[in-house]
Image (cartoon, rainbow, N blue to C red; front, side):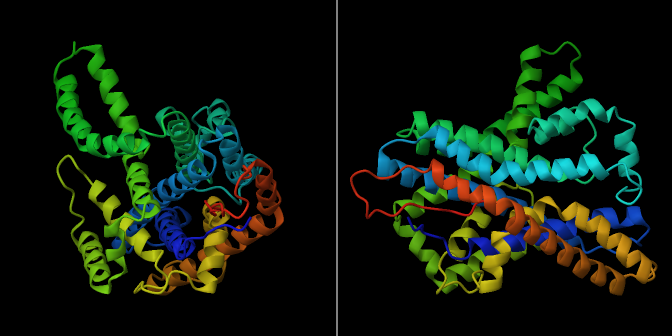
Length: 393
């Protein structure tokens, strides 16, 4: 059955991942001897990119589950999890395998970073990566070179399980639960600030306070409020809420992008709310991108759609691409140069990342993606109904 596809989301995903890659490049290039020439705004655009990454997943997964509820009356949790596993696990474990094979070699060694990991008792810590718990690694051991960014994939997988269970067993209350997560986030942040200060100043503080602090820290780290924002936008689009149509208006889009630019300039951090308001802005951008004809920024060109389609592989293998680019550029140009070398380094890194992502998609991922069709519910009563097939990275 043909699936509906939201125009613009693939392109928006690729743009977001591009800035994450550039941020990581600027982080690591000095390890290879390149001079510290940085573009500060790249970090903040990458910060917004990560928000898009999580908001987009919250939006698409929730929309997908709402459609399944509409067509079949309930969520088949097993099928849902199997589709996610087939999308996420194969390329992830390919990356982990390549890491285990090459991270000790001189060629793929990241000066400083690799040394710290080798001295950390890494053989046991690899269990987190092998168990698909990369987001737990930072709490116990130094993160692994070449795959440290996979913590976001672990957070995504955790989100799939939690959201799938909520929508399976509490479908009538899911909207209330997601709203509660969004509303509780600043309240928890406020309580955490006072609780943390109390624990720091009182040696015999109640153990329950330490447990509470750990819970809030993990809650924020897991981006539950960001996913929930995406879910609320999905509810609005799915139920065709009237206010969603306002994002078709160009003047409204200009206002949203103006606020986004203002954030990138000021980096304003609201007390207790933190940067959650950025999630709202990113949600607005996401919804605007789905209106192909009215959007003032065209995220759905043919090339953008393709790059978005392979963006999961681009993201997974981009640290390998950074190492390859630094090695290549370091041999053919002077690392003392700043602007010219950095620009060249960016182009080579993105080119290699795209090449690796394309190879991963066409020669590895696509085989498992075809298997997802075995885990889709078929409508028994209305064969003409369309299901939603979303390309989620």
